[in-house]
Amino acid sequence: MYPRPFHYHRAGSLQEAVTMLGQAGDEARLLAGGQSLIPLMKLRLASVAHLIDLNFIGGLSYTKEEDGVIRFGALTRHAEIEESALAQEVPILYDCAAGIADIQVRNRGTLGGSLAEADPSGDWAPCLLTLSTDVICLGPQGERTVPLAEFITDAYTTVLGPAELVREVVVRRPPPKSGGAYLALKRAAPVYATASAAVQFTLADHDTCLDAGIALGAIGLTPIKATAAEAELRGKQVTDKTFEAAAEAAMAAADPQSDKRGSAAYKRALVGVLVRRAAEIALRRARGEKMEAGHIYA
Ligand SMILES: Cc1cc2nc3c(=O)[nH]c(=O)nc-3n(C[C@H](O)[C@H](O)[C@H](O)COP(=O)(O)OP(=O)(O)OC[C@H]3O[C@@H](n4cnc5c(N)ncnc54)[C@H](O)[C@@H]3O)c2cc1C
Image (cartoon, rainbow, N blue to C red; front, side):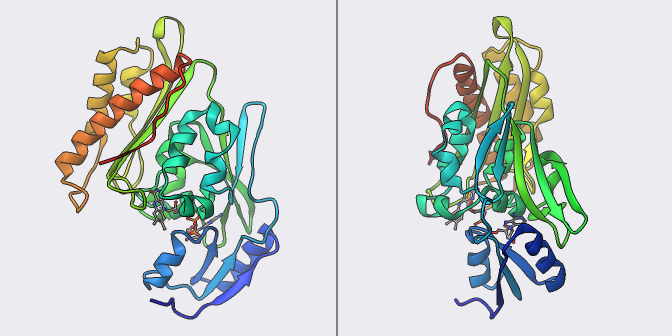
C-alpha cells in the first residue's frame, strides 16, 4: 500500500530539525533509517503529515570513546556498530547489533531510531539497560540527559517531548574482568524476538560478582530491568546455583502475553533458559574467553 500524501522536509542541522518539529505540529515525524516508520506509513498505521529527514545532517553517525565513555551518534546504523572494533571489545554490543533482522535492515536502521521507537520487542533497549547508558535529548529548551532506564515509559512511548529528538547515546565502558551476553530467540531473521535476555557482570577475586545488570526484552510492554535477579548475583560467587537463582528471579519479573509467538507460560520458561545461558557466556567472557553468542533461531 502507498502511504498517505505527506510533506517531505530535509533538515540541515539538528537545531533545524527541532525547529521544524515545533512548527509542523502533531503529525510531524523524524525519518532516521525508516525501518520502523516507513512500513507503518505504508500500512497506514502511522499518519504523518510532515516527514523530517535527518539523513542529510552531517556528523550524526559515529562511534567514539574517550576516558571510558562510549558515544554513539543517533544515526549510527546497527551494521556500523556490528562492524566496529568496539563491539569486539564489548561483545554484548556485537551480540545485539549483529542479530537485528537482516543485513538490509541493519544497514539502514539506527540506534537513535530504535530507542525512540520504543518497540517492546526491540533489541537495543534491553541490551543497553545492562550497561550504564544515557540518552542525550535535544529540544527547544536545549539538551538534557536521560538515563535509559527512565527514557522508555510505555510501549512505543518515551519521555521525548513533541519537538525533542535523540542526539546521542552514551554508554560507560564496563570495567576490566567484565563480561556480558545478549541472547534472543527468534523464529526467523526478519522478525522480532519471542523473548530476549541481556546479562552483564563484573568479577572480583574468586569469581565474586562485583556488579550485575540483567534485562529482558519482548516480555512486557517495556524492556524489564530484572533488579531482583541482579541482586541474586551481586556480591555473591557466580556458580550454577547463583545463575539458577537469578534465572528464577528473572522469570518472576517477566510480564509476558500469549500471542502467535507463544503462550505466556512458554515465554516465561524461555526467559529462565535465556538468562541462564547468557550468564554462562558472560562468565566465560569475563574470564577472557572469546566466544560467539547472539540470536538463536527456533
Ligand atoms: C523486517 C524488519 C525486521 C526488524 N527486526 C528487528 C529486530 O529483530 N530487532 C530490532 O531491534 N529491530 C528490528 N527492526 C527495526 C529496526 O531495528 C529499526 O532500525 C529500528 O526500529 C529503528 O528504526 P530506524 O532507525 O530505521 O528509525 P525510523 O524508522 O526512521 O524511525 C522510527 C521512529 O523513531 C523516530 N526517530 C527516529 N530517529 C529519531 C531521533 N534521532 N530522535 C527522535 N526520534 C527519532 C521516528 O520519528 C519514528 O517515530 C526490524 C525492522 C524491519 C523492517
